[in-house]
Image 1 (cartoon, rainbow, N blue to C red):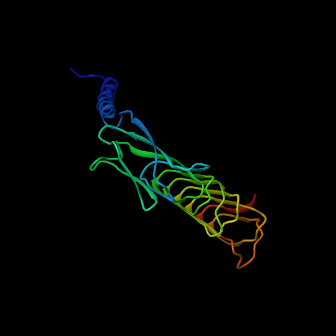
Image 2 (cartoon, one colour):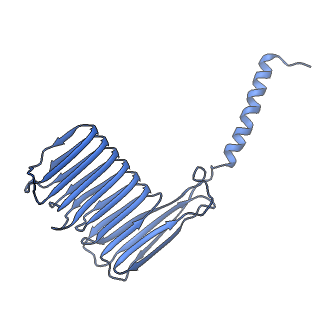
Image 3 (tube, rainbow, N blue to C red):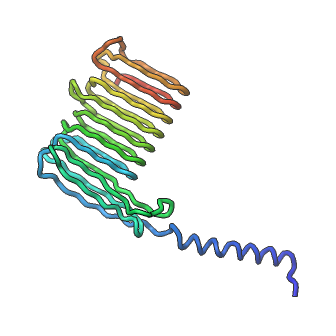
Length: 241
């Protein structure tokens, strides 16, 4: 018995949808699990070194004597990250690994870090995908992310402290409450905004291939406070508070 053309079309469409739906239900649809752990370091710490893969890193400087760390894990089945940390030579080191042979197209494996530390600590922070947030720090900072924003507020670097930031895709926004020895922001695709006190003069270098430059800080060549801002594609703003 032959079916009408319309019925054949509807039947074919139904057959095409069913396997796809079944596939969609079985691959990559599991709800990620979450896990949180916090710990306070008993050792004296002068610097932080955090290396992530996927996940945000937040460091808050406060009037505290000990470093407190919160790790927030998010993962699907067979994708649970393994975290590790130690204090060596006064440096707190934290990192994690994901299981081998998992596909990140269908699995989640990430760790977010939130660290409260004495204001004077130096920080070296790196993540492949995630935002980096800094608040209230007085020490030197190196922050790197491949995909994500870097934001710093109420930064008061000491006379010799340097702040270095870089992201491939994302914005950099830094607000400094004290003039730095040197601050730099290097972006491939994204905007840069650096705000500094108006009480000092700055040696400024700003380069963008595709974007606008707005510089409204007091400048002079050879000033002891240097600002370097670069974006291949994006606007640059260097302003006073």
